Length: 159
Image (cartoon, rainbow, N blue to C red; front, top):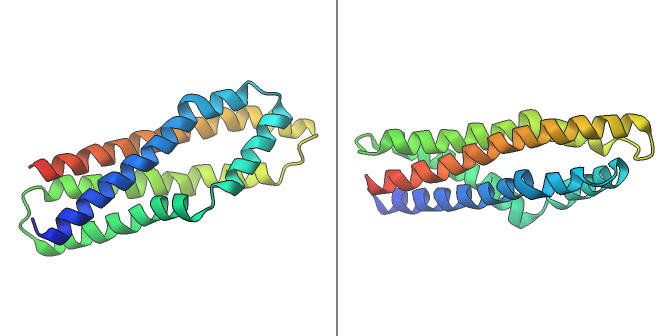
């Protein structure tokens, strides 16, 4: 394995692992804690989280890992004869599709809808209960995908 592929694979594995940890925290205790609050307070806290999460360290790691996975996949395909190419491509695909793709298709639209809802209305309370279940379910999918990407990329280094 070339030094560039080695460095990219390690970087993608670490990025996937960091993001897996963030998502794991949300599914395992952040969302359950917000669900224990009254609807306006939980929804308001989530609205603030959704604004605060847009920062350089988080977005740099989240999106940067995706860009690096695409670069790694392209270089892996271009290089040709790599013993762990299928593992590398699988790990990259898990991250890009299962983490970034799921975020764009499922979590972000729910976040955008929640952001527009007035906190004091009963429709917000109803949506909040739906949001908690559905958002957490898709977040758990992202957790599993980013964790699997990390593991598969590490295994690709060992082959």
